[in-house]
Amino acid sequence: MKTVEEVEKAVTQLPADQLRKFRAWYEKFDAETWDKQIEQDILSGKLDKLAEAAIADHKSGKSKKL
Image (cartoon, rainbow, N blue to C red; front, side):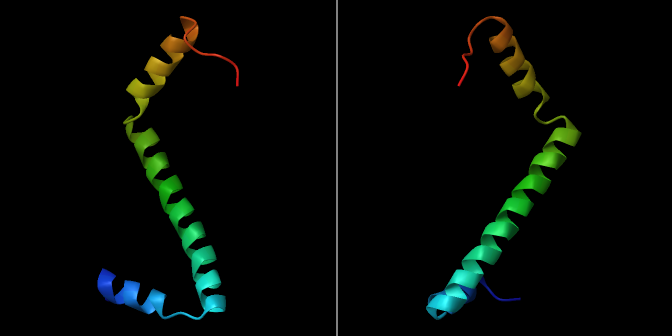
């Protein structure tokens, strides 16, 4: 396993076309990782209080249409 520093150095040495490919891959990887974390947080109930507060605010007129 490489260290973060080794990965950073390798990325800085990529030619432009490879850097574009890496960016596209990393963007997809990061989004999928975020989605998995949010799903875990939802399933565990971690976000329940936030959702309840948002619903209460909406019902009390503290929200507006975007």
